[in-house]
Structures are given as C-alpha cells and as structure tokens.
Amino acid sequence: MDASNLPCPRESGTARSALYPGTFDPITNGHLDIISRGLCVFEKITVVVAKNVKKQPLFDLEERCQLIRDCFVGLEDRVTVDATSGLVVDYALEHGIDAIIRGLRAISDFDYEFQLALMNRRLAPSVETVFLMTGFRWIYISSTAIKNAARFGGHISGLVPEHVEAALKRKFG
Image (tube, rainbow, N blue to C red):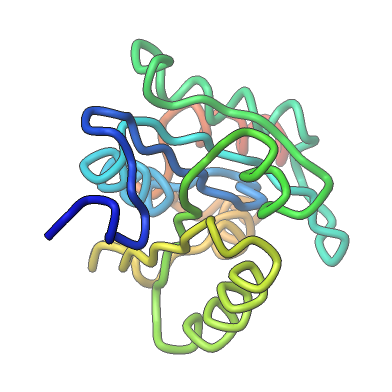
C-alpha cells in the first residue's frame, strides 16, 4: 500500500503526540496508569488540566499542575503539563497534537466519552480520540472517591502517589 493512501499520512520517524485531559483533582494512580500505557503508544503526552465549570475543585489549577509535574520528574521530555479553560480539541489543534487519550473505567463511562469523541471529531476531524481501559486495579477509584475517603481520614495509600496523599492530608488537616 502506498503511504499517500493512508488516512493519516506522515513522514517516517515523526513523533506522534497526544493529550490527556481531565480535572485531575487530584491525580490518581489510575490516571498514572493511563499515562504510562499511553507512553507505549505515543512519543509525547501533554497532560492538560481542564477547567470544568460543573466541578468545584479542592486544589487550585496551579496546585493540580504541580502535583502532576511532580509525578514525572526526569520524564519532562515525554510528559508535559499544561492547563486550559477552553475546548480540549482546540488546545490539540493549536499545539499540533495528534490525539486525545480518554480513559474508560466502566461501561457507564463509554456513553459520555463516545458522545464527546464524536463532537471532537466533528469539530476537528484531524484529531483522533484513543480510548484506553483503566487497569483492573484502578477500575473503582476516582478523584472524587479518594477525596471523600481522605476527608474522613480513610486509608488512601497506594491509590495516589505519596506526594498527593501528603497534599490531601494537608488540605484536610
């Protein structure tokens, strides 16, 4: 097959990049699982902390970005962190990013994520959406569940990186 006939022709050796959006309030080991597996597919991933008007975050935008950066010390050439208050797909177009990674924990996530992917395809046909299933260890965790457990002194060790656990303890006293 001729490379010019491929739906996404590109020069050999060009790096593919993706963004992984979310509110990450806070980042969990489930998120880290998606990012690490995404790095097996993509050369670079930009973790984009998105402002969600439906959510009242515990950590402010810069705190969330820093908590994520602290997870990838030494990997800054492959994982970068940024924030946006606009459409994630517009961010991808503006930064020349090839794909959006979305994590799926359960079938209940799929309907919402599918609708979002179709809207993004309509808005920016050149940006692909790639779904990655969360590892079995992380299926039932979410940032909300972790915050609720931490708020009441629950044991969250092993569900978030140590520095995130410490940050949650500082927030909740």
